[in-house]
Length: 125
Image 1 (cartoon, rainbow, N blue to C red):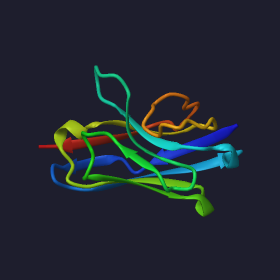
Image 2: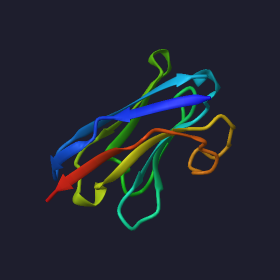
Image 3: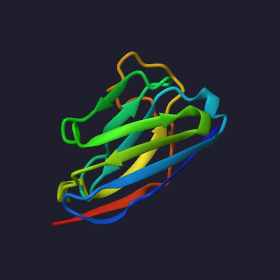
Image 4: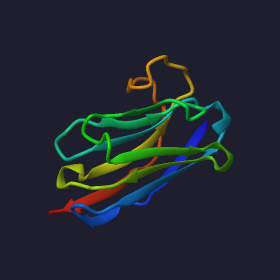
C-alpha cells in the first residue's frame, strides 16, 4: 500500500505562483510514475503533469505546458508541482497520484491507483 499526502494549495492572484507538495509513504518503492491531477467544479479530473520513476521523462498537458514544472525527489519521497503564471482557469482541487504498473506512455492517465486527499487551488482574477 502506498499513501500520499498533498499540500500547498491556497488563494493566489492571477499571475502568481504556488508550489504543491506531496509526500509518499508506505511501500513507496513500488511506485512508478507520479502524477498531478486536477478537478474543477463540473469538470472531469484531468492529468496535468506526470513524471517517471527516475525523473527522466515528464509530461505536461497543453493547458499548463511552459507554466508548471513537476519535480521528483526519490530520496525524500517527495513530488512537487511548481505552478507559475497562474490563471483563473487553473482553479481546481489538485491531487497527487501514484501508480505501480509500468506504462510506456507517460501521458496516459490510466493506472493511477493511489491518491492524495486533494488540495484546493483558487486563482482570482
